[in-house]
Amino acid sequence: MNISIKELNEDMFTITAEMITELLNYHRNLNNAPKQYWHTLEEGKETLKEWRNTGSVYNIFCNGEVIGFFYVRYGGQNVAWLEDLYIVERYRGKGIGKYVMSKLDEIMTEKDIVSIFVDVIPRNISAMKFYRECGFDHLNMIQLRKNYDKRLDKEDEVQILGFNLKKY
Image (cartoon, rainbow, N blue to C red; front, side, top):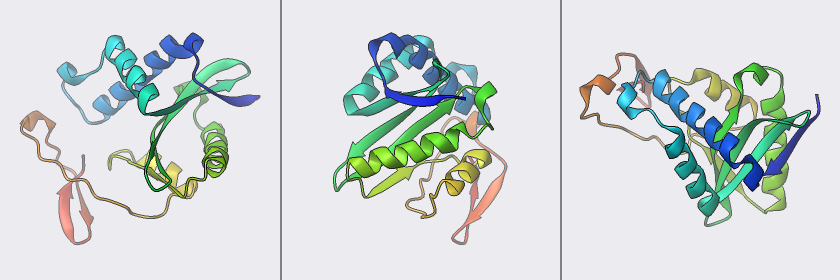
């Protein structure tokens, strides 16, 4: 497998927007969100336009075929946020994600970034495991949520720092 990473160009815009839509809807499905909250391709395109204005989007290629992307947003004090990483399902579990993370480490070092953050929803255990294996080992922030649409409420709980919270 020949894996490469390139910063987003216009030729990859639509296919990347399609993947963004798949990723966002994967999260909606993971959380059993009603279909009315799912994203359309047009919303995926708008998201990608916004991302290009606020950070860097990179495409992931395998043997010349685009198979994923990642989006990094930069902040003050030389820190960055890995906002999203997506690899087409049939390419998952082949070590591509870890390869991409090693390349991301190189990019961050070249840009003199001192820390990178990633947010993971508690239901996405595979993502948490993956990021831990890639060296993310500091708990930085806990984000709490209050649902007004009770269809979004969950039953599973997790204990964090002595608090029982519903696992989103």
